[in-house]
Image (cartoon, rainbow, N blue to C red; front, side, top):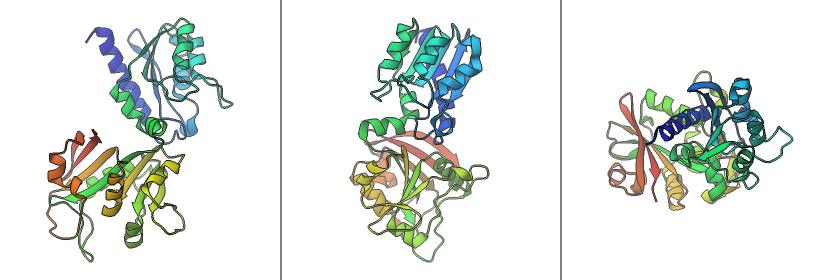
Length: 323
């Protein structure tokens, strides 16, 4: 890989890590990261702030000041080009700051900006490089899925035993995984706009569906229940397809139970799997859908493992849909 291309990929990865700080507080705006580099030195960093403003570019430029001139700006999403009563277009403030280059992770699918942001920068004499890399796309999965599929990005989470059970028989301890795995789930919850369970799980388990880690309790996502009846204090939908109507939700976390998981799989609405595996056998209870049984996942061509880690005695694997 040429030196400049290698540097671009490295700095874009840094911008992606900054973007993670914006999720999910940036809603309804996408979580974007920006970093300004001048002669190999970071002179400005930014990420979309709570409520969507200021944008990542504005944050990074304010930090950089005059050092932005002649620098290279790395932005995970094409700088916006449309007018807003909430602030100037990022393409315009970048053009005024006159960096030498702007490297864009992903083109913005919003028709108000798509291509226009990059064009405005080029018209200002700034070199523009568009990477369209998988890392930047992954960091904007919720925003892009909304734009391309008109629904949230869906992660299906299941905790199961080695023999494929996600719940024991009634009257027994229902925890499958240990403390470390459960804490990891709360971290994942804190990055979602909404969390969904089926009506049966809601009525039988009365789950809180919140974030209970010290310091980030306020990150608890909106609660949604898949059911035919009305419920107090939560949003209800009657079919998985109705997630398309959740206009303010970019990231949806589906936690079960088994029938709900199967319904989302049948509807081809699952983009990612989070599987927590405990080193135990249960023998009886509620089994996970057949497609998510350990042996099925091990031989699946539909799901590709993208992350694996040990959480205490349990293991965690994230899978991305391949087809």
